[in-house]
Length: 65
Image 1 (cartoon, rainbow, N blue to C red):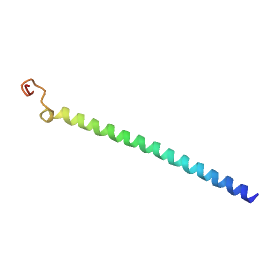
Image 2 (cartoon, rainbow, N blue to C red):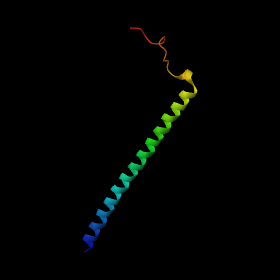
Image 3 (cartoon, rainbow, N blue to C red):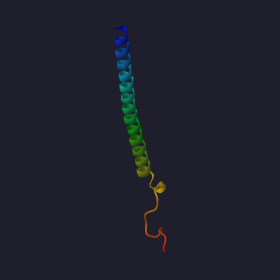
Image 4 (spheres, rainbow, N blue to C red):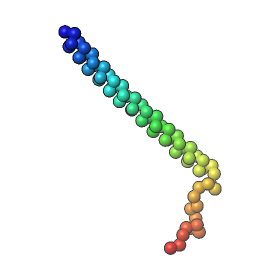
């Protein structure tokens, strides 16, 4: 009886540990994605505010091959 109880508790702990790990990875993935979106938004805003920092788009600045 003690052995079955011990096996059941260990199995429950293993499943709980794996479940906790997968939930943590999911939460961190959302945080990384949100951080990347904030970074890209900041780059776009900076580029819109400072057109001199943007790459040239006129025909004169292109290379002639």
